[in-house]
Image (cartoon, rainbow, N blue to C red; front, side):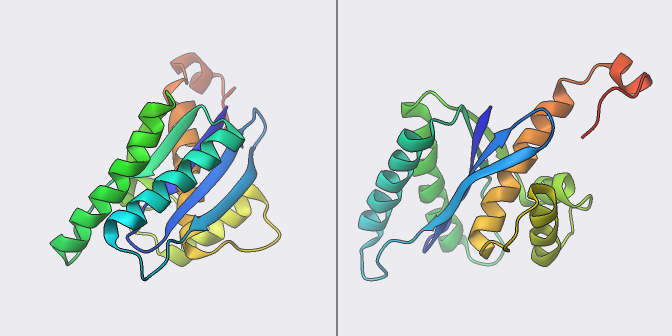
Length: 171
């Protein structure tokens, strides 16, 4: 199964394409979509839309995982993030992708084991879990963490009590 992870942002949107194999997840691609800072907000939405469509067309993911909106300090930024998420969700719907939405705490819990983990801890674990030679950018690491969280959640939802009793299942 190929999963597309999205870290939506008002200036940059991180994306990751991860293949969930039986042994370990494998990175196919990751990057950051960065519209022109001089572009209007609607033009930035369009640039993200087109970029995500191109990525979906190239890698043919079966699912999309995206970080949910959270309000840290500024409601205006949260609303703009909601617009960016809407663009990504539209791309998913147009391409028939199953969507998983996760809070920042859920993602950190799945990747590091603590919902209060720092960004550096998340990045460290993403590098370790995917056996990356180079550390990704912050936006890429966040998108990778979202994709890995989705893979982890998908796998754990398929675990039967007998698998746990007989220790046949490993994360």
